[in-house]
Every structure is written in C-alpha cells, then in structure tokens.
Length: 104
Image (cartoon, rainbow, N blue to C red; front, side):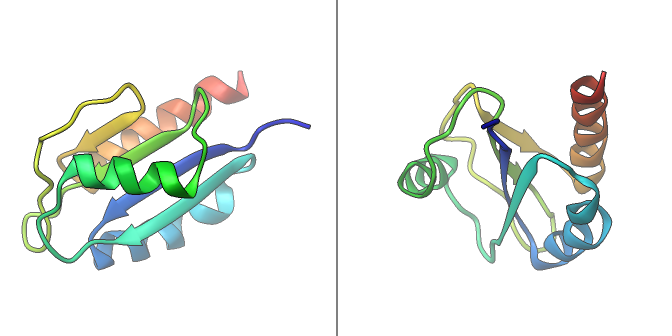
C-alpha cells in the first residue's frame, strides 16, 4: 500500500475556498486538508495540534498561508515539514512544482 501525501493547509476562508475549487480535485495521491484560520496564530501551536491528527511521514507538509486582511502567522517555530507562504500565489507555484516532480 502506498502512502498518500498529506498536505495540511492553514489559511483564510477565501483562500481555502480557492484551494478547494482549483486544486483539490486535481491532486491524485494527495490528501489535501484545508483549515480556516480567523486570527493571528502560532506556527508552533499548529504543528503541535497537527501531531495529534496525523503521523506525518517524509513528503507530508504543514502549510501556512498568510492573508494580509485576515490572518498572519507568527514565525515562532521551524520544522522540516513546515512551509510558510506569504501569499496563495506562492503556494500554488510550490504546489505545481511539487506535483511536476512527483509525476516524473
């Protein structure tokens, strides 16, 4: 049995809607979990909460996407599987690049 890559994305309501609409259906082998964030949150807290939900393996990522109008994440934690993007566009660029590498 192969492992589905887990991408846990924390972002604004608007960005979650766009991600679900644009990418969720077109990601074979990837479990895309989106969570709406409403306030400024700690990356450390998100990572600790995530450990309770999933056992992350190589290739799984916790992703935080800033949205200037609604949520900005505190840069209080670093981890190999934690990615923090300044905007949704940067996330989509990374996602497209990551998918291309997996399909080759």
